[in-house]
Image (cartoon, rainbow, N blue to C red; front, side, top):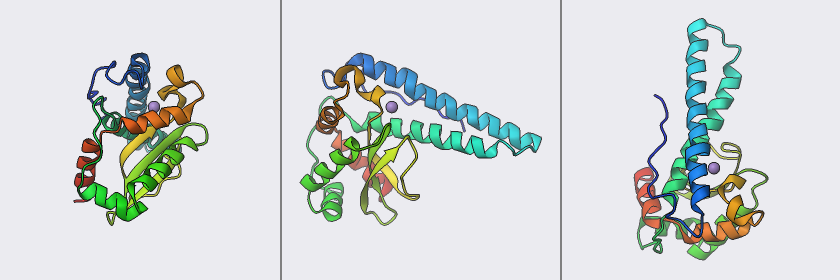
Length: 197
Ligand code: MN
């Protein structure tokens, strides 16, 4: 099945001044769209390779699927991870899981911000759910490197420069700080409930 660009849950201007409208527009309509297109193109080429029986390109195409498919999936989570009207994480299963996994919310916050800030070159900081319901933070390089199979991301902070460079230039830590204040904890808690059912 082909990937499609999900609807942005707010207008391009909604996250200003934390993330400027031009950045959101370019990021969503150009960058995210390119991952959707790249994924679909790789799917077509894979189908053609299978139809022809020539599997010489399969290794390359699987890399393309991993890169573009993971990029598409993480961007879809990224847009849902933020809200123009953030509220603190309410008591509930997600809060309990964060406290069980990291000790307390403050420790989680520090580790998550660190994970986002220390990514080498382009990547992500994510919060993900283990098969047993435990939570883990990952520093992802590109869209797909340094993660464990079986973990499902529920919160994602994009730290590719296209996410923040127009407003923050090289000050990634400032962008991460503001991203954290804009997290849609209601949405993240709903994702946790779905994954850790
Ligand atoms: Mn991005």
